[in-house]
Length: 358
Image (cartoon, rainbow, N blue to C red; front, side, top):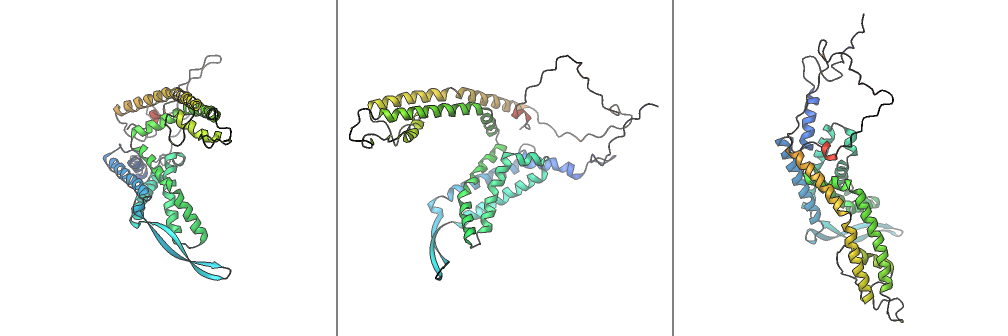
């Protein structure tokens, strides 16, 4: 007798059964994941994306308004202080934000928390979800609000110190602006461009650092040509009292920002300033065309992907049944004979090519 054909895989293990569709979790998880992850998957996904965009803009607006004087008030709080001689009272001055801004921020955080939990629950790969930088930003931007609410009612000194630290790190809320990359193709193109142009940015930083060091040293000594011998520190005729101060001037000049707080006062210093400005233009102009070329490549690819038909969800394959053409052991791929050249490797795929069509 010939070899027996392998038995088909268990339908239960593949979440499939004879004549019955897959379980509700297998059916609904991709749909719910696309609802919160892909704004272009359905009309309801667009509504969810618009809601998320609305809360992002409201949260950023609230964050900016909390720093305005019109939405802050100074209050006097009486605290009980324990000393060696006993207990006493102490009046502390604090700045309190208008309560309605806190309520608005709380409403936004509730939506962000709901969205984050839904995406965690329905994501197909938890490991990739945890490694994603955008998901880390979501979690870091949500966590301080709950910690601040939990510690606000405590009166211990340690709790107040932690609360003060959390108020300082409120700036992480502005990181929610990166959530917009899920809704705008242009922002994703910009992110891929920056990632692909890392070497060019590093080269630009090295060139600028060398130029800043050279021209800061030159302007320091150039401003001392013809100086008053009695002015040893040079504080009466120049702004460049030392080389580290010249670093700021060199950065401002090489980036063509312009002068403001310090500028050369002697003819030799002006000559160094002119050379510094020309060197800055040439330094910045060298790596910029490569960065622009990368942006154009990714942008063209993104526009081409938008014109492609949208991919449909593939059905879950059923195991081959006895008598079907695919039933039996899978054929073994032919191997190259010894000494034959290997087939060429394919180049790595473009990051935008691996994304879903938007």
